[in-house]
Length: 489
Image 1 (tube, rainbow, N blue to C red):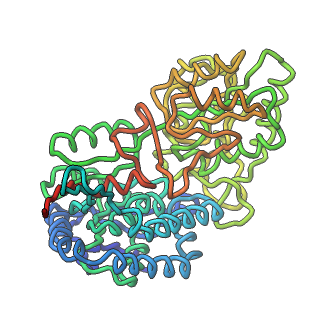
Image 2: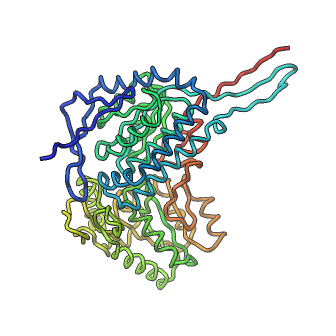
Image 3: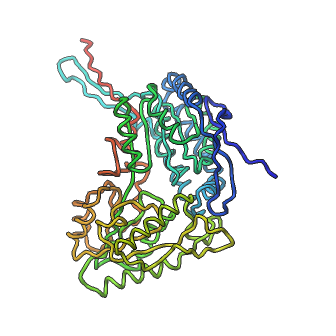
């Protein structure tokens, strides 16, 4: 019998086995085969990673930006060379389709590409003669050690929302991957090592909540980046505030997809399929509530029927099969959570018109983590399934008599991550983007995912912090502005 791979921590440029006797299985959610075992690292091991990052900071900070960027250029080359392997690993440990994994890998690489522009992005500004013989300027400097608490839904990409920018600006970095699917981060660390990034600059420490707690409490960590649920994000935000750390906490969502009577339905339906059921709905950008606007019953049923019919034909199975359109939930717990919400929807009076609880699966795989697309009709924003993040392939269909009502429905949510409108009216689109309380807004776009050079925004309970990930925001997050006023005359 083949021995199961035991993952190691990457600390100070070395792969180090954990002394912890607590191991969790990393399971392929489609096949239910164990891929590896991940340790729940000890406090001493976490502290060792922080110490390594702290010791590496002074020299890395003094490394010229172009020299730091050359490491990232080399990393980009290595990521391209290993593109397909990285994508396959994501599918195997997470469950998403291979096309979705390729998209995730590409987005991660784009973060590295944008971070290579740091010599320009990190520039300060100046003004001479603010008074007679006095000049003033601003410089931006790195702060030190940053920690990242990663989610399970995008195990490769999400840490790359932050780490290339942290390294390019001269900081050092520690990643705590999700214990559900940590292999992607092991593969990434191997390539970071090969790219020539010095020991201690980038570290990976495995574990669960205990490890995250140590990072949050550690006095030598200057800031934390987090992506996950609002419940945990609120705790991360609070504890960072207590210890004076900077924080980016990107949290839960409940995204409204609004379809106007003048929308191009043929183009809208495919966009909605990807939005609601891509990544099996395990995405903070996923559509959750489908709002069909207008009093015309014929239009309502035209959209609804097309939506349900297309969803019912989605091919569900193991994501390494190129023909598969939706993979399993990442874990049994995730599936049970979704089943619980389906039961609540039925109990609260919503009409279940497409039931995915007994999935049809392409191929001979256990149904342990699988669901099929599920659609409810007659949902209202105050119902549990219309209000809370389900994080699964469940769509809640609502009606609104006009755009004003649809916007008010969206704004009634505690979340404000990525609402979208489908319309051929510029007036309606402008009113929507102007009034809707959402950090990211889509116009005829189902997945409102900002490019690497724009901030990944968020409002209300979907985001805690001031500066967002990606773009110029994240450069400011990882640097401190220092104002210099000088007189030489």
